Length: 125
Image (cartoon, rainbow, N blue to C red):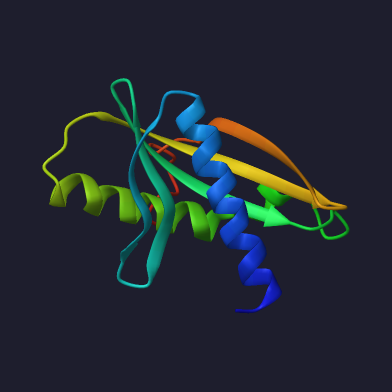
């Protein structure tokens, strides 16, 4: 496995641990619908939470959370809708980002709750 894939897997593992420590119940990892994917799906209280994990080894190109662009948000919304429909769920949904920055074998995690909203007008444009 390439080094960047290892880093991404490590980041997702750390993100799951962080979310579980905050009271999330893990439902899915790497859930796919067509070509689109959501890294982590959890349940926290009355919410189903769709989480994108971005792990970077530096900020020379920007902070990790900045890489969750309009295209990725649109894909996550599509996957979330399918997941909710397929599982006949009616809970509220939330979109979070876990941004991870690694430097000198140290990982700094930033959990951004409600990073964006499903009702954004550009959801399917």
